[in-house]
Length: 414
Image (cartoon, rainbow, N blue to C red):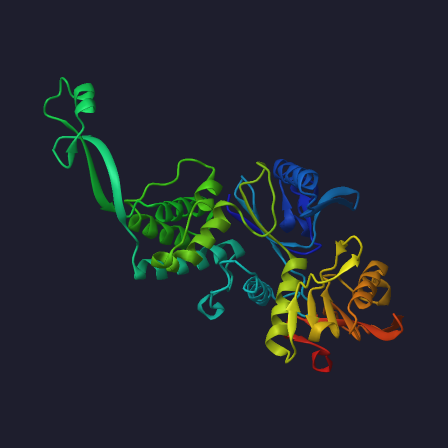
């Protein structure tokens, strides 16, 4: 059953049998699927302390509530759950929300999204999983046009013809009766090398999880192109990818292999485990928001910029509790830290966040301003905080970044 359920952060998943005939039914799954998803959450909460969905109650019934993770979860029954970010001004515009999510993913380091041109992709009505598969196939098409690499592969087999070197011991062992056959060893120039095996294995993997007929048809075309390539039989893909070395002769394979890594190892920059689901690709919105704002600052700000600066420690002797502000401008005159939180009034700013900003201000000698960057909310005014740190006046300033308009309300005043 290929069914798509679309959620936004903080939306809930219900048990189908308990909400039949109600509005919540469109965001509901069977009890068996609900239990599988619940076990997936509990396992990851226990092992990785990662909470993709929160087990809670609503209207006196158990529900699973989306948290700050976006992406895809595909259940073994074929249902795909798509979780999108909650972006102010785009509550009813799924297509633009997906485009912004992809723009944010493009800023992640060492990711296959980096080189992708968003203008090339038609996202209308396309599920997020299909968008990711389409991106991979587009990159693969570029690789195929440049040429699939082949290599001399050593082959040993029992054949009806003589080619290369006759293996005497094996000939006596296997062909003592069948004199018409030859056990031979020879080299053949084939595309059956490790990089292509990884691509073939990825194509077979995504064929199983793809939803639409057109995508499956396109995957079959690529499988035909890689027909002479064997798939990886060992499911421990990490060993193959770990030992893979990309030299200058195959550097055009790099983006495609990053996609393979994403699909085979489920490398969505959010580690998870569990056998209760078929496939998952999940991203922490805290990391995505930080990555996007940092990239935006580097492009729009005429100041020296350091990202994830590790110069200072909260305790100097011995050095303990390393400080890592997201963005440092002009050797610490301005410090910025991103927080993916819903802030609808001053009371939503946590004391912990302010303590963290105070720690930054106290350890960067030149610090004059510290900005806490939150996602944009309508009609909300946040005050500035003035504090004295080491006999200097420092401002702690909460600000908003509007993802729908791609702007920050105060960036010109840095």
